[in-house]
Image 1 (cartoon, rainbow, N blue to C red):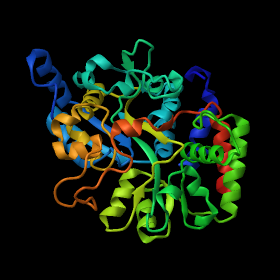
Image 2 (image 1 turned 30 degrees about the vertical axis):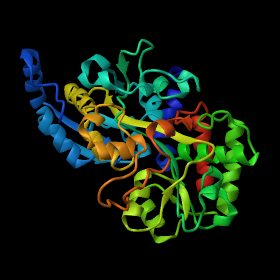
Image 3 (image 1 turned 90 degrees about the vertical axis):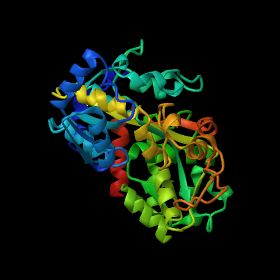
Length: 410
């Protein structure tokens, strides 16, 4: 389904209702007269951004300000559903939403986004093929290439990717074996009743429930990211039955909450962000990231320019800065990936080797990573081969959120 086929009125209604329940280096500004003028203009602008704390970091904003010469920066941490509600409600407090690509239709269909020309960013030249060349594994519209571009010619972007990853299952290896953990069914296995965790974002929860149901022989859904209304009904019934049986210790939505629940041992298996697994290991607690046989969930986050912003150049410069390499170090060492190959030029070779190339860790122990350790799942190339689906806006979005409300209230 194209963005134009979405129901705008329904989307706006959801934005204030059920959606809320869902939960430097390489700066291009310092050469030539034109660049000098651009730098002068940036000094009169500011950047006000909103997004997950994963990317909205004071250190990164401070480094961007220094590298670009922009007049001022400010950042607000918010979940995707909360940020979506603010923007669709008409807030003029932000210039940029560091959005997850699957939610782009919410601002495209409501005319709340302005495009960014790829040619306006010098660092776009080093973007990874993942964001420019569709894989033959999926239809174009169901992968990231079909989500971020505003035109088929790939000249303008609704979102500039800044961070991406392939999500999996966090587990305690002292409790679960790798064989038990390396499947999405582990989250729903009665063996871990009361010690399992589920994310509060319905676009995440439904997809992994469907993957588990496929493995259990309860469903046969080709694209877990875009189920039919009937498939959503069956997945909702499955989730509700598991909730009523006491399967879940918690429905988590906050990074710190996730870390605490895993580190305390209250949750031994859950869908998890890889940085949370790293944070648990840093406390000296046993924690690993599974390699699910069904495949990973793939996603990308990046700046989208909010329509009507008076700070267009600042947003474009910020998007370009994310691709310059330096900001990618901070997120790469949390367990995410930079979409730009520039990261290899600025990251220490031994660290790049560990995080991107599947090489053993060398040097002193760091956050629970010891000499000789390997990144769970292997190299970027290896993990990319095992993606089950890219997060996307489902055709039956309203129905899915309605069913999620029923799950929350069950």
